[in-house]
Image: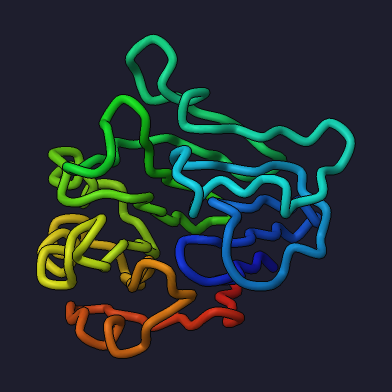
Amino acid sequence: MAELLYQGHASFRLRAWDGTTVYLDPYAGEGYDLPADGVLVTHEHYDHNEVGKVSLKPGARVLRSADFLAGGEYGKAQIGPLEVQAVPAYNKNHDKNACVGFVIRLEGRSLYFAGDTSRTGYMEEMGALGLDWAFLPIDGIYNMGPEEAARCAGLIGAGATVPIHTKPGSLYDRQAAEAFQCPGRQLLAPGETLTW
């Protein structure tokens, strides 16, 4: 069984059935007690890259946005059973050449972590991916707001869409999350998990 722990803000911990543990955008919340096989960083803003919070297993890899943007193409990585594909992420506050999102495939499920972004042209192609979950920022200050995020959710077409990065400086803002409305909306609060 795989497990995704939402730690808050844009921070997650993924754990595969074989114990492979990967952290995404470490910064917020609890749950950094498991040593990591890998750490994924969508971009270098302070609220996404506190890699020092994570203890690393021998041979663990820390993969940053720059590692996925070499040669002008969005790269891939394999961390144990996790297949990681970088995808575009950008807006007026986040440079297209320094930021990525991730599509991760694990144990028969696909998850899209948008990173810090607003609508991208690539989202129009994502419906073909058959994503199970999409995690979209909705703060409306550094990223798109809930209305734009809902339109993006329609383009992406994931089975469930979870609002994250709900309020700058906050682990989670329930009222902001509830303002996000789309078919398949799923609310996930810090400390809650998804399993499959």
